Length: 136
Image (cartoon, rainbow, N blue to C red; front, side, top):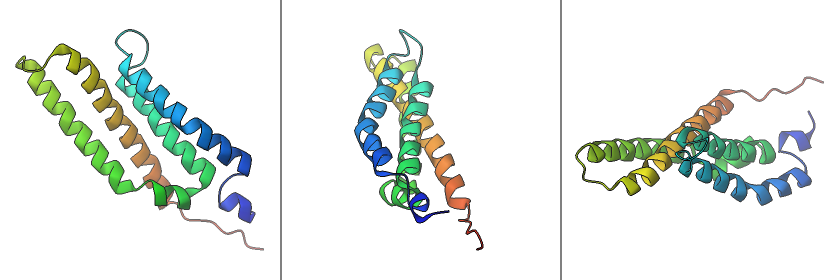
């Protein structure tokens, strides 16, 4: 492989990634929050958010992405989102939380769990792969 392919994609791909990353994240949050009135929900929104982080890995390369996106932060995000989700579920059974907060917080927690989980799986698989060098 050439050196340019090992370090990431071309300048055009990197520029497009920088421009579209915010829109992809915003769309994932939109899908997560509007799942009750249309197609989508926390799972679909979480998948879109995870794919935006995978988009960074593809555009900038594994090394650059792993420096910016720490795997420990992903573990922490999944754990905190699961804990918050559980707290909201328990509080909603007792009637201690307004339904409006339940409709906003639970899909966001679900999106954070799914997005962080999918990103963690993909990042772990990428970290476990060995870089192959073609013998010449």
